[in-house]
Image (cartoon, rainbow, N blue to C red):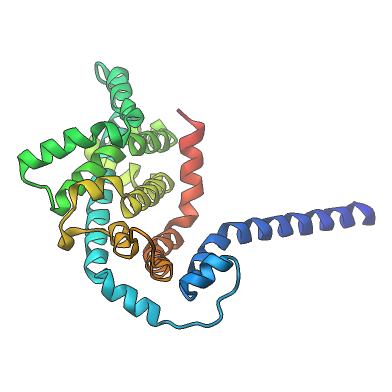
Length: 280
């Protein structure tokens, strides 16, 4: 390789690096804008939303925390999100294992039937779910949101995990059967550990959905002691004006748990999504 080729390769790497930095800044800018917006006044936001704040008064976070009853809403969101994600992973992984590894009559038809749940919008099932939860006496309890989020999250999660399970060589399954390993033991000891990217993708995606979901929560959780974080924003939204600094403060606090979760699982996330997108 001559000096000219080395120079072109170096320039190409620098251009790629600059492009990635630019994409990072574009992706990070909304979060930075939201955080800086919490230190502005309403007048400053209306006059120039892109301007830098004139000062950094963190008392807005304390006031927003108290006014929104953030501690209670945070615990409600954590409880609903954790339980929903656990149930989604458990149910969808078992279903995905059956469709990816096992053979039974009506397998393809049942798989397509469950997968069809993805095309059903929240607005269509909102009223039937409300009536059902009312008869079950679970309205204004966290379980109404957990049931709804779990049901909505299963089809896509099953699709991602099935595709991830199919990447595991079937020879491993056949070998373990010869050694006397039953299907459930193979699922726990081999399939789940070998499918970490798919599991990470499902966990992040469904946690993000449950954490930010608004329509179901607004319909099923009207009592103050069961409201989730998205519902606390209504405290600062008035008929004629909104308290934008406190809204930005609550949003800034709300994204922290999801960012932490992503940082723990990000090395598996892209691989899992790629596996789910390539194979169908």
